[in-house]
Structure formats: structure tokens, C-alpha cells
Image (cartoon, rainbow, N blue to C red; front, side, top):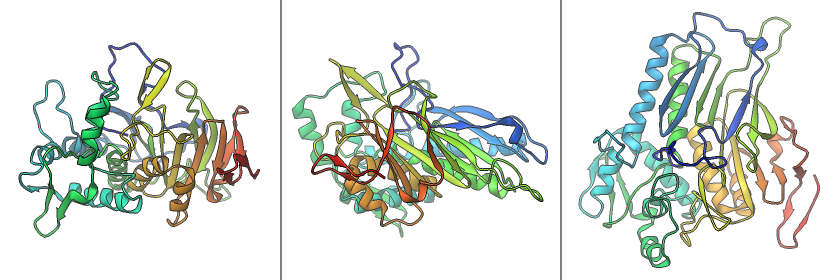
Length: 376
């Protein structure tokens, strides 16, 4: 999920080239009980998408402004494209400009996120790689310059992608890309970090019930109501996007509290050539969009940075390796949607996920070798 890419509203619309792509909130207004003075939801275009912050209590203009100020600060630090009318170079762009030349002094938030990105690169053996920038630029998916690169262009870009050549010096507070031509892109993790920061600010203001929707990266705080005597907490209901249908269509519903839900899939940003879909999740092995039988992966966990990074990581790894990785991580669950309309739900979600679309079916562990499915 590259936060730097602006949807181009002047182009012919295509399916799912939309702002809200990962999940859909299903909220019954009659269950919402707010306390304290609060304003309606506030929306802004930032992070290359429409963001919606909904504080169901204590939502003052000052608090909304503080949350969006922090989101804009993250965007201005971590985007990797100069935007029309804005000559500001983000810190990430400056690191990329100094690749192979000199380390760049960076702030603690970017340093910490680069460390997190490097962690995911390590545990996925490079399937997730923050140095994927050269490939992202070549394909240009989601921009005016999207195209299928020539094979020799991809061949030349691949050697520049190696997370081990990103040197982080905590003592000096610097980041350095060791070879010229290397480039960072944090599009697969930065929106998650922004979601965590938004929730942190809300919690510090004593907000107990909120929804942060950063273009489909969802973080929910508390429950859908304020529990009282003889009134249990009512979870938020979040619909998981149907990857083959229009925006707002969902395959099923998750009932959750205090969690983050992030999806990566082939439908988020793509272009079509001769009937073939070229999506934005690129393989660091061959340089082309990942093609492994998955349409999408939805990650459900408490930390939105982790949910964001893992959704791309697990999608890129594929079902078997992705599931194996998930089993090593505590409190982390997933929903896999396959090209044959089958859906695999990890154990921790089976009691809180309801399949509502009859075109899809829940399965058990897939036997990828034989092509057979073991029914749940």
C-alpha cells in the first residue's frame, strides 16, 4: 500500500481504483452512545487517500486538529513523490537522494519505522523489503506513469533491492543506503504507523470509542457502545471487501473491539493491459506483480503498523509460507481470499467472522500440492 500515490481523478474510472479499499465499517447509529462534547467525523485528504477520523466522545476541534496534524507530519516525512504545487522534499526522499553518498540524520519516528520495516524484511527473507523503491518507480502503478517495464529495466532494478544494504545507526540517528540508485518506499507500512499514532493521541485525550479509517486501514478503539449495568459491550462490525466486486461490497463481517484491520490485495491499485491485471504488490524476486493464487490477505491484530506490514508480507509470501509466519506471531490472525473464491480464516477469527456472500466458501487447510481442499 504505497501512501505516496495520488489517485488521478481525471482518468477513466476503473474497478477498485478507489480511496476505501480494504474494509467496510458497518455501523448501526442507534447503538452509538457518546459521552462528552463531540463533533461529527472529520475527513481530510492526506497520505494520498481520504482519511476519516470518528471520535465518539470528547471529539473537540482541537483534538481532531491534533490528530490530523500528526498524520500530515508522518506523510511529509515519509512520502516519496514531490506533489504538484509542493516543492517540499520528505526525509525519505532525502535519504534516497543520498544513496551511496552519505548517511542522513533522521527523526526518531522514521528511525523506529525503518527498524520495523527491516524486521519484517528479515523475518520474510526479503519478501517484504523497504528498498523496493526502484521497482515501484519503474511500474508507476497508481500514477500517471503506470506501465509495464521492459525486462532489461527490471533486471537492472532488482540488484538495487536489498534491505541488508540499508544501514541504520541508532547512536548517530542516521539512515544510509549503501549503493547509488537504491530507494526506500514505506508505502506498505506507513499508513499503519499513522493509524497507531492517531489512536495514541485519542487515548491520551481519554477517548474510549473511536474509528480511524486511513483509506481502508482501520483501527477501532473500544466497543460500539459504552457498556452500562446489564448492557454488554457491542463490538464494531467491519466488512471485509469483496476483491472482485465494487467498493462497499463485502464477503463477510468481523466483530471486533480494540484492534486494527488491514488488507492487501490485487484490487487496491492496478492497471489492465490486454485483459491482464497488473497490481501494485511487487515481487522482490522477479520484479513483477505477485501471482500466487491469492486475491487478498486481511490481517487482524492490535498494532496497526504490524497489521499493515504483515498484510503485504503475508500476501507476498503466499498462503503456506504466510500462514507459517503468522503462527509464530502472538495475537495475529488473518483472512485469506483465493482466486477460486475460497476463504481461509485462522483459528482466532472463526468465532468473530461471519461469511455473508454465497459466492465464497470457507475452507480448511489447503493442500496446495494436490489441489485438494480439506473442509473446515
